[in-house]
Amino acid sequence: MKWIRHVVLFAAVVCASSSFSQEIASKMDAAIKKADSGIARILALTPGERNFDNVLGFLDRLTAEFDSETSMSIFQQYVNPDSKIRDQARQAEETVTNWYIEVGKREDLFNVIKAYADTMPNLLGEQKRMLEQTMRDYKRSGMSLSKEPGRQTHSAHRRSHRWRPGRLLLLPDARGSGWRGQPGFWPCIRAWRTGR
Image 1 (spheres, rainbow, N blue to C red):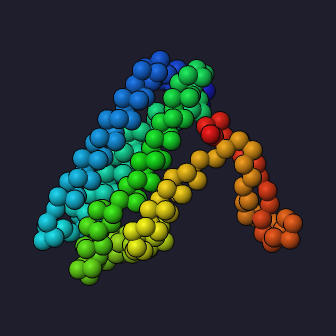
Image 2 (image 1 turned 120 degrees about the vertical axis):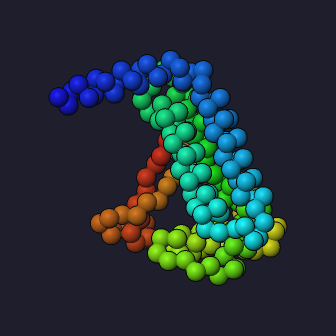
């Protein structure tokens, strides 16, 4: 019975591949426009209207929907036999990654979330942790610094997310043995086809 599931999945991927060749870019544009309009909705809230559900909760649902809308197109880079579709899917993944970087570095969105956090809302459990983790991530990304260093961090981060063929990456070694005197790391070369 397992083979039937695999055949059905493969047939779905092959059938979808013909439609993906025309739709990947339009799906990405539509998903980004929808997500941007959702962020605009968050930004349009007055300080009195802001609460967890319409700021962080809404942003979380928005990104979950964005992932759902874009994931099948991105997945095609791994399974589609057509090289043109794989290339389009790789470009789609880069577009999605750049969108996430842009959203993570938007000062207007940061200011809305920070203003909500500064009201010291009485949150419990997952909501409290989500607010704490979000503010921690903004702080780590340099959003609370002056504007100029934050912008430099943003442009450097956007350039560094791409892996280039032959780029050396040091990954933690589970065995604890070091490489060239650096305890716990070993070299791994990643050759990504999308590297520029």
